Length: 65
Image (cartoon, rainbow, N blue to C red; front, side, top):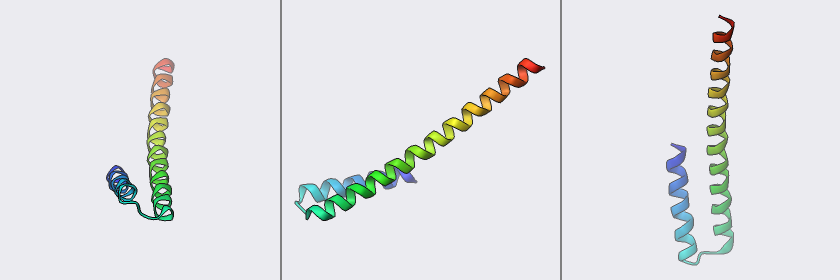
């Protein structure tokens, strides 16, 4: 899952920093991690907005009944 990918890439980034790899490699890993985290939040926000809309529709149906 996406969360597992984030954890693995975070570990890889931390190891590269600790071992003193080239800045360009560290930067590339950091950008990849940022992109995965952004994708994770986009999906989570999408789920939450769907739930909010469903709840709103249920409330409207109850009021109209």
